[in-house]
Image: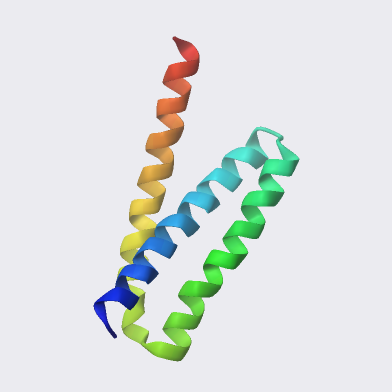
Length: 88
């Protein structure tokens, strides 16, 4: 596995988990169109990680797991930041 493949998997996993967290928040807030759009994004981004693990290298799990962690933290940080701007 090359470094640019690992970087691509890492970035797509960040985007996937950001989309997952945003989808969950959109469903909780009752925004159906936003939830549907985030769901489509999750499907597309999930294919990147899945095929890189299955077809290219099982070691792609490592950058994907790291990217999922970073993506979740990023999405929650962004959500808290948006809430603090609304309250001000």
